[in-house]
Length: 98
Image 1 (tube, rainbow, N blue to C red):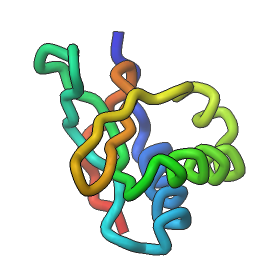
Image 2 (cartoon, rainbow, N blue to C red; image 1 turned 45 degrees about the horizontal axis):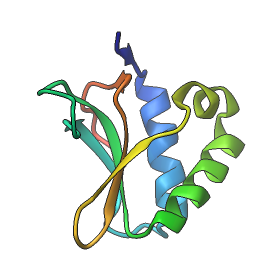
Image 3 (cartoon, rainbow, N blue to C red; image 1 turned 120 degrees about the vertical axis):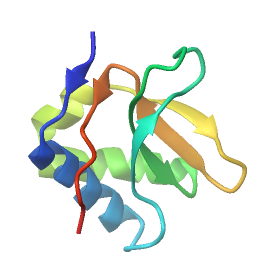
Image 4 (tube, rainbow, N blue to C red; image 1 turned 90 degrees about the vertical axis):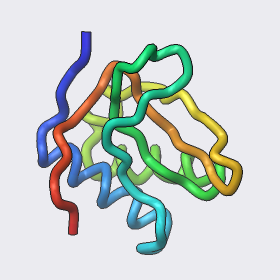
């Protein structure tokens, strides 16, 4: 069962990743289908390093502790020049992010 995130929750995720990445190229990834998902999609975040995932978790917890707890531990895939962390049980409609 997939839990749909609200636009506010997606913006909180984007805010946390922007803080960690100092406004760089990384951000929220909509419609990701990771290993073993058989075409199902979920929300993910692009990161430069695995260390940024830890920083993201800390930042998201300070912004929205309930969301951080609800997301739980992500799965990760290596993208060659970075990683994507994703939550197969959570998805979101694509929204415009600032």
